[in-house]
Length: 503
Image (cartoon, rainbow, N blue to C red; front, side, top):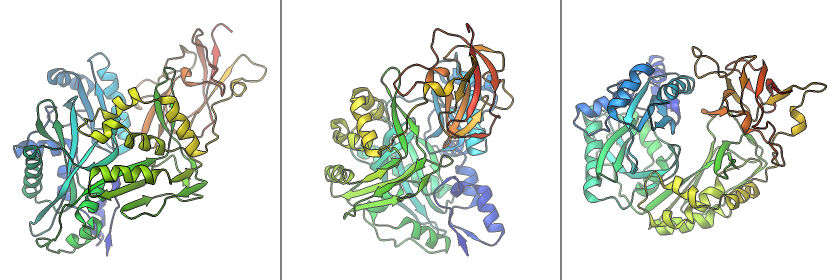
């Protein structure tokens, strides 16, 4: 009997793998020792260092004390990255540009990591501004045979969350050879067994490769490697677990593949007309993915499904293969125009706009590509296309809804379903307390949805016609804190009661 843990966080939990094996089940994945050593990103970096594989300058192991961490950060030199040792999926990572607010960000990230990953360990790395994110798909059997199934480029990212992954292209031969060499050294020296991904930073300024981390599991983007190699990685995982020898595995890297992540999220414009993206759970009324040769769709929704606020907002993957990158891009542009998802907002319009962008089509971009794209794109046009695609009828809070009848007090309602956190950690002071006087930009709480934490301020609230609900010229007294710390709240739930100071 065997258990395949999927491709989520459970698949790289050494505790879960240990329990499976203690109860007589084969765990389809690496050995516990591999997961302990490489699943923890801080341990993985130490391992790479010991093997003389170059790593980004950073802290020597995990840090927990903000005061100690700020000393280490100053030694590394700002800007620095704070990263969760057990993070993943683009979560648990933030860049800090100056020492002033470092300790408060570090404390907040500790709480976020503890809540999202069950472990608050953080470590630091020097921030590299111009880079590409490369990763090698590997699999290794019990007989010491390693297979490298190509390099993927995951440089199209938003807040360190991968959005588009594809076959690596335009990589100098020397860099490509180094990436393969370091990946093979790593998995051979630690006697790794199973499928995994070895990830690297390609510093475009210095033309250097640095080891970043290893994922001891299959990743969301593994179909890219399957499409170009013809190898069924999930099947191979089962065979390796059964002791099969993969020395004679027959494959050839052929053509190009691109994967688009379809995410349930809505696009909004902030006060400065800049785009922001918010998870959009809800009922899905219609789903249609056309059937087409060379296009593979992996979907977790169908007509009538519910997108939950408690899980990742990824609802589908669209993977296309072609003989060339240009062929794949053109194929995806045509394909996306036939996809329909109604009831929840998605990033389909964003994916299409990226595919049609000249800079994306040209290639050679860094992980800053998407930020540059947002600076140049017509935000209002993109917003209209996204709203049209979803058929969503959701609206902001109505002004009358915040007024307490026969009172000068006002309600602060939850804008979304999620976890309510009064402070960055149970040991820290809450953001606000009763009788406290605040302005509209003061953080009231954190709302967590799909492992993403958003700070809530009075400035975030507007009526359906765009009118400001809590004027900036006023100060407000917190009369009552209604919601309980770390409990789940629904959209429209009463969180706080406040009162204008001049009332």
